[in-house]
Length: 529
Image (cartoon, rainbow, N blue to C red; front, side):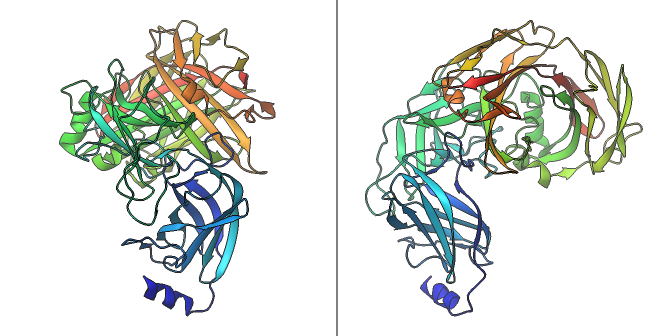
């Protein structure tokens, strides 16, 4: 390691590093949100360019490097006049990961990256704790990194069950004492709770693992929850909720997970295990609030290892749960499963034809197996209650011809939604009759302005059975809404929306399952306190 460093300093000074962001290494939560910031003693990741060597270098022995750097990279944090040299984990040209020393003071400060003598700095916020759960897609969203007590991963095809004790993996429980360049001793942190579906559970152990900066939380899955392939899971530390993602929970004796709606049924998960993959066709036509009417279609092969790391074909959770997305976006937030870009898409046809009572529209393929187009605007909407069809004519090389239809009933709407939401208490929302639908989606969103072109967004999405006319959103979820955000352009608060969803599944040669959904949402912007 020292030889690499000496060789690195012997060459001409490199171009100055450029930093694009600093994030908790588990959650990747952007700045200016209620749970943003780097926790004392936690792993963080810096993104940018010229941060380190072209070839990734990972620390391979103890003690972990600090002032000597790794591959020519040294990282320092300066807060309140105190400078701490961070504990290196890996270094590369576009990413660096290190541990923020527990002795770093809480507050605002700067972080510097020096590579081969050239340096740059970025503003940071240091907090006492903010737990970032690692996820299977390495992006802080989707299925969480959870194992059983034998360290076998909990996935959609190896689900946990009520009564099982599982291990959550992440970083950010808080500061420790001792030498953080060496393996830590076990120490149980107080004030830790785990949100599983809608229950807050006290873990049996919450502290460092056998690796510096890496936390583990041992918790028992409670009885009385609905479960499913995308059951809520998140960690609260002294009132601060981390990223809220998902895990798979099934009834006793069932190996795979299974939702009661959508493509993630137990039968489809069993088929994925048997065949090693699923061919999925996902088509939706939707309008959120008064935005454009958008059509989208994606036809792809999901190998089993990709399927279990994906969002499962939808950004919504299992019934009874809520999931939260915290990301940077432009004028609006576009949620995209990071796994989908790496899939092999299926040749389905040069275009899809969308039909309704207002006429037919042809949507050309934008890339293999991918379709997208705005079909209406707020001034001239395309979607209204009625019957819709989507077809691909004679089909493509991979997917045979099909014609699917869905009838959209009259929309649901909130009943007596309060004009102000208190983030510290549970909120029960009610809506009009939804019996004509399969499920009801309740979601809220808010954006904090970062600069002239970027915002930090928080969006929660909850799912309720259509037989219900109400759903209770846990305070732990609401706590992630910023008090200084905007729920619409120049309108402070958070947008709250409700939608009825019909579960229409189809089969066709070339697809294991196809899904066609048409929905609209409605709701106001509420104040957040």
